[in-house]
Image 1: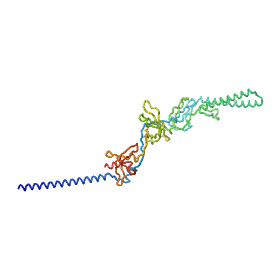
Image 2: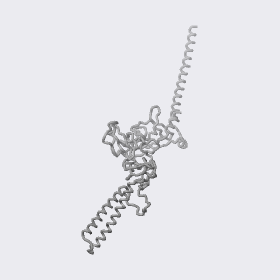
Image 3: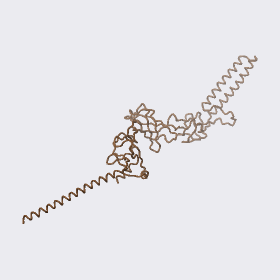
Length: 385
């Protein structure tokens, strides 16, 4: 009886062990199948398929990997200023009372445009003196010619002839001096058609150049003198950008270096070069100044505007250069989405030197491979779904 009971217990344990072993085998098989299925699913998720319509809809741009240039730059603060050589201070050449003002602040003017008129007693005296000197000179010429004819006929003495010649010469000198005074106030000659009703006091202030009135200091009825500055005209077609170069950056900045002037206020960037670096360092700021000249024919750059200036310190070529917009980060790894036959696939890349727009790829992208250059974040978002 005891033997039979022992055999029964052994058979039960054997059956339990076989059942447990089969369960373990089935469980292991299920886990292995699940892992393989997950691996296949992962491989499927690594490739994203988008139609041409979807590419257009999401504005995804493609490009081929190739060589390019990387520029090492240094950004400096700058300020737009007027070119002093194109700044004109308008001053009256005679004193007088302002009769009328024709231009105001901000007006564009051309060479010869009438800015204002004065009533000047000083000008009237100069005009009158010039006319009197002219009359004396004409009279002296007539007297000289008459004495010359009389001298030929022996009807006058040599002394009288020489006196007439001396008077003529003196009259010419006085007349020439009077005309120079008239020219000094900006008038070449007096209107010969002028009658007794002419206003000899009228003085016209005209623009000597094209430009914009940036300062105005005159009103009707105001007394102006030769020290007054009623108008300032600025030619804004070419302006300066004054850069602040800090002490630590002085050795990097050289004349002739290419720069890009950036406003950040909707004004298109403009390229130029550094044409001057101050030999002195300011005692207050411990910085030097540099100058960039830019064209401003459309007058979008306004004096007083603060700008950023990117100075190109070096420029080199690399085998693979891509725009920064192509780089995305997945699991703390920089990736680029490559277009393959199966779809788009993220490739980890090793990055090198960069500038404000491009970056060098050292590994992970081959020349000629097609990749996403813009809006790659759409693909990243699709993967994360």
